[in-house]
Length: 318
Image 1 (cartoon, rainbow, N blue to C red):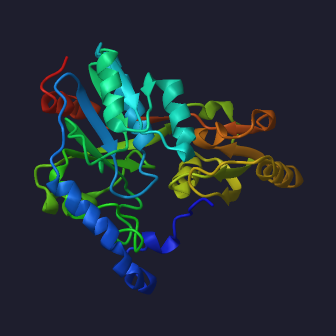
Image 2: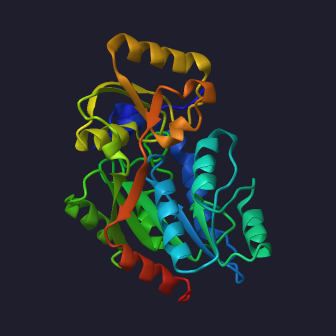
């Protein structure tokens, strides 16, 4: 059974359920202590970047990884993306494989070793900030600016893998926004109180193929991603007429009957069907005919500054 994020995780203040679950947080508290005391290995023969999160799911890690891959590939580096293999995350693996050179194995150290053997100069990990063995050269933490840290509690009381105070040990934060111009003063202040030296950057999602759609059409949308609301918000911001939304758990594996039900609802209500690329790649190929996915790019507002910061941090690679 797939896990669906509890709604109370993203309340701005913890509710009674969150407080009742706090005794179970000790597993993550112990893990956080271990992360801070066990020495990690830094590799000399390759530079590493980790794009991760401390808020679980829906923070824009994969689009950020792809954007950084494109930036550094354009800088004439031999670069690869990477992700530890998880059976239930084939969607992200497929997207990374389609849009970049990509390595996946069941151990991140083995991934680094393989990248070194293949003479890569730079390796960009999708997820892995909580890895106990690798000391990455640059560590970037992703947040969705709308959800921010939710109720701020550790799993299972809230959506946090680590407390917000772990930002003391990371190099930069990137905020994913639905809107190009967003006021994030409150978030900035919270981050800077914890780590005055950390750099903060903003990104937003852009629909590349918007002109291919008739915005007078009515749409049924569905998704099984970490933050379903961000998909709907993006479509509404771009004036798509969303009539109905069906939400599935993150990394949901679609079966024939799931898609058949969606097609039936859309046909009965005369709706066009839209989903995300992550969901589309998991749909059986024989059922994709009447389903479209939006193509998105992540744009970093301060791209030049972030690129220069990374270059400096990982010893001026060029």
